[in-house]
Image (tube, rainbow, N blue to C red; front, side, top):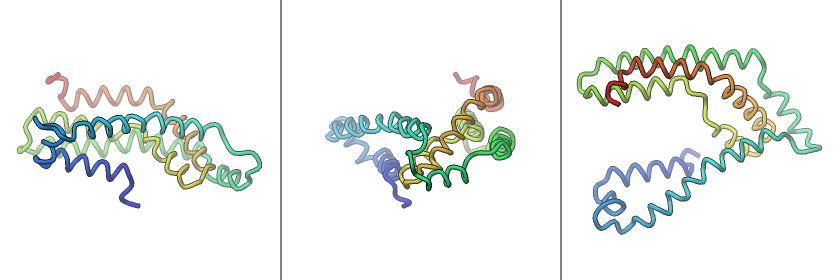
Amino acid sequence: KLLSPPVVGSLAGLAAGSIAPLRDLFFGKMALLQPVYGALKTFGTAYLPSALLVLAGSLVGKRPGNTTDDKELSASSPTARGMGAIVTYRFLISPLVTLGFANILQGLAWIDVRTKAILIFLCLMEGFMPPAQNSVILLQLAGRTGPAAAMAKLLTVLYSGAVIPVTILLSACLQHSGIMGYL
């Protein structure tokens, strides 16, 4: 289960970009595999629309007459307390932990200043962004439509409520990382 198609694709891409002979086959002067790269890139662009379709389908709701989904949905529906915990962690605790990590990263002398600014910005940003929709897709693939619908609703509420905190935290990240000096 660890070697899912996205993981295999990422590892293959890492290998193709890191190993010089492979990189030359895809991007070099001879680039014999350039058409393969183009085809894979086209397939890759279909992922996001597919994920959005699964998320939208999960929001539609349950299938009529399925009592198992009703039980799963009620057991996994987000509560106000649960949402409060998620929001507190995602927009307060996680950014503070990530800030501590970024401060350690700033002390590293072996990374040049520009690269360090980019790394710090990315780490800080990852600390507070809302979660991806992959959890809904994974639940759908497992056939657990009730929890998938509950997760889709939770993500919808979280994404809607994240607009203001993400804006504030993103501004703070830009300022703290020093990346604006390089743009």
